[in-house]
Image: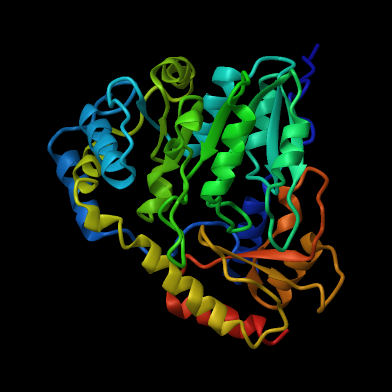
Length: 382
């Protein structure tokens, strides 16, 4: 008798990112769908990795991460935000931010717990909550502003609410939280048994002079928050899968209990390389300007198109409204234009639990100038 496999996630299929990237390859389209750069990282960083690889730093590192790396990251956070995390007890290196998100959710969510998720949302949040027996509770953000109604958040909280997930700068909308948003959140959770998970992988990709509002900046939020980030996004090395989690000691202890059974450790020579690379602020303080130029190049190039859009405030994604061109379902349209126009995008409805279709597509502008202008030329012909 053959055993019967009862899927824990029967409604989960291949992600839209995989689907659209494959279509871009199959139809020789310009891939502005999946969020990764088509340019390389700094040569200095690659040289550091080679140095540590050749110097024999190729065995298991400590479970929580190479100490030199944790020291360097804690120093960077202190220098950049004037906030201190102890590198020994409050900083953990992970195999990408998605692992950090999974470990943080698993550390605090038990069967029956409710988790508030603002949608459109990165696609790993809800499945991870469900795998841990929790219940995702969605609060829908609508275009064009995608602003959080904090009164609605307050009214959504129940005695079962265990976690609220925040993402700023936000994927896929490109919006960012304000200091007033942090204050509103702090008032809501101050006297409640609620943890926070803050996905801040685009912390340095923020535009127009805005400052990144990390949850660590507010004392009420910091004491209950897992703050996760990604060096893959920051230094154009998404394939390295190097992330981290910053959290108070008590939260970190539970986080590491999960982390040790997921990946246990992360690639050793890259950790040493990043430890050295982080010491020089020049290696990251110009990232906002770097990506803002790319955003502006792309937006200027699609001005002549029939799309409507407001410039993204953060992340390396630009959303456009196509409702005056066609009323076609965004997922069908994204696939059709990949074939017919030769530019792949991500339909934003996939980020909603009920696939809300607001006639919006997401384009990634983390590409070289020639690619952006060529893609824009094709889009302007629609």
